[in-house]
Amino acid sequence: MVTETDVLRALAHVIDPELQRSIVDLGMVRDLRVAAGKVTFTLALTILACPLRDQITTAAREAALALDGVQSVEIALGEMTAQDRAKLQGGQAQEGLAEKLNHVKHVIAVMSGKGGVGKSLITGLLAVSLRRSGYQVGVLDADITGPSIPKMFFPSGVRADSSPLAILPAETRTGIRVMSINLLLESEDQAVIWRGPLISGAIRQFWSEVLWGELDYLVVDLPPGTSDASLTVLQSLPMSGVILVTSPQDLSRMVVRKAAHMVAQVDVPLLGLVENMSYFVCPDTGKQHEIFGPSQAQNMADWLGVPLLGRLPLDPQIASLCDRGEIETYAENNFGAVAEQIVALAPGARKPVLPGT
Ligand SMILES: Nc1ncnc2c1ncn2[C@@H]1O[C@H](COP(=O)(O)OP(=O)(O)OP(=O)(O)O)[C@@H](O)[C@H]1O
Ligand SMILES: [Mg+2]
Image (tube, rainbow, N blue to C red; front, top):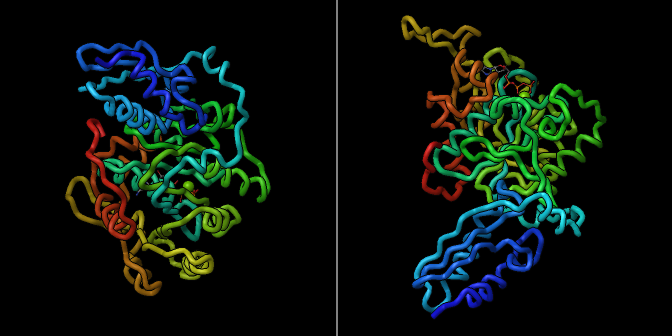
């Protein structure tokens, strides 16, 4: 007969990866019951949004199931009170601890030669498409002076949380993990007037101090052009590749070439080109109009020697969804094919699509 003590003894070997202590010592195991081979308990996480929660829950379940006589394990998730947490606050945020705990398969940056061509939108759509296909996805907003990612995903006023030892990304309604300077500021309207080294420092912290947990894809939204911030991302993050965004107005090959050059110089693969605002589909006639002139995209892609991943239409609906923090409800799937090609170039581990995503 398995007893509660047996189960507690087994669970004592399960270590919280962040705090490096046993979940039993930390007081996370509560309301433990064992009846007829069925184990039930509540796991009180330091914070419910903890990106490591699946990892801890799986380890706890396996430890209990390994006991002879245990047939099933039911774990309810709970959260510690502020008082409980305060008792654990022996630790200071440790530099690089989050980085050690993170497992990020692919880092993909979205770049352009100039501003306003739709990098942030494409970052957002790529994250949404990948998530819809069942991948674990994060978005790192590396545009420190002009952050626009949170506004696409959240109603205003959302802030990043922190666990005892690290910064936690905010989680969107479909489970995309997001970090942006705007999630750390007192007010979203606060301007960030920082010089290059501070900006680079913030970007590095978004990588090393943020608990991303397990991710198939971390999509990075870069600021426009070939600034310090972009260089920091390309040089200090383990990049899988870069996607270059242009628009039909982006006639200056020089600007695009500069961006492509920068990517080549730091030895990061250029995965391909996406042309945004390529055409407009008239809602009355269904006819495509190339309002900004004929597409240069294939031409440009051939010239750079990279694939043309896709052309996106100008769509007023997407602009208004982004303004309302509802990019995840965008029903058009005109970006799915781009995401699929990126997956083919940098494969992740697809998991079953979660309900509601
Ligand atoms: N295909 C599109 N259809 C409709 N609106 C779009 C499209 N692409 C971008 N927009 C809108 O254009 C504006 C600029 O896009 P976005 O912020 O993504 O560009 P960006 O390249 O990230 O700009 P920045 O260089 O300032 O970071 C946004 O308001 C966005 O919603
Ligand atoms: Mg942007």
